[in-house]
Structures are given as structure tokens and as C-alpha cells.
Image (cartoon, rainbow, N blue to C red; front, side):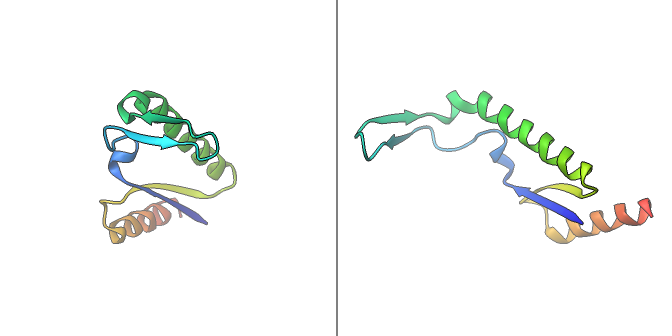
Length: 88
């Protein structure tokens, strides 16, 4: 069994708009979220999650492949197949 985890290259860096206003529709309160200010916490959380997913897959005998959306999927499949052949 295999897991292919795909993500955009900028996602780990927390790239995005300079700021976006979020509003609580019930309370009417709002806050401006700035990705640059949240980048460190976000990046740490994402990296920790990826480590946990990889370890969980490994523990279950599942091959985990972390794939960027900029990589043609044919390349990803060929590399995964080559790893399988090398492992036997």
C-alpha cells in the first residue's frame, strides 16, 4: 500500500496574501490574519504533522511519498515503482 501526499511548494512556507480579515458571524468580532506573522508556528505544525504521518505509515507498512504539485505525477509513479523494485 502507498500514500501519496501532495502539496503546493509554497504551502510549507506559509505563503499567501499579506493579510486577510476573518470575522465571527455570531459575535461580529473580526481579526486580521497575517501569514508572515503566523509562518513560524504554521511551518512547525506542518512539519510535525508530516513526520507523524510518515511514522504512522511506516508503522503500518505503508509507503509514504511526499510530492510537490509541481512534479509531474508520472515521475512520482516511476520513482515509487523503482523504490519498490530495489526493495524487492
